[in-house]
Image (tube, rainbow, N blue to C red; front, side, top):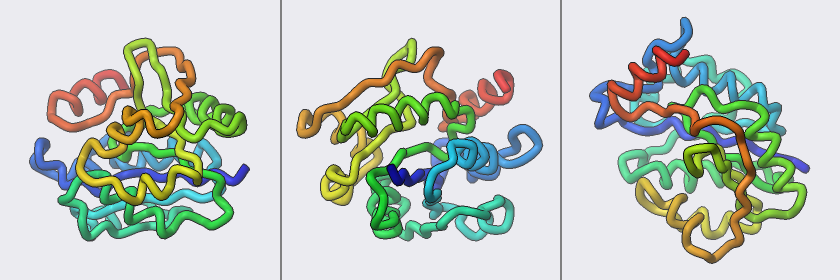
Length: 193
């Protein structure tokens, strides 16, 4: 299978008050750590969508090996990044794994579990952690037309919960990896790291 990885990192960090992509984490930026986790998954291609603070991100983050998508509509929610990135997904891709640029501790094993579901022809697969569903997610190419119609911040969740597609839950041990929306989230992530 040809699998694309898509890291969403275009947010404007409104709740945080500064670009979370550039927050210090393990001696680098938060987005560097998330991209390192994505690179460890050995996707056939890796796409990162940036938007808010794009110039600063380009200057501070190692984007090597990534196709960079500038989402000029990033204020319209994270769905706009998915829509913008779909045009860059390689035509050979059987589907994509969706990751968050503010969630640096996603395990390779989680992505491997999604790949196994994809190989079993699941159109959508999500990780089922001890404390609920969480990223990363798998979307087969057959779902791309629906992905292209998403809008808003919770569009991808609405698609998953719509009943339009069967959704496979893959069991992943542990809690949903921390992501950063607020200073409290960032503090918890740094303390856990």
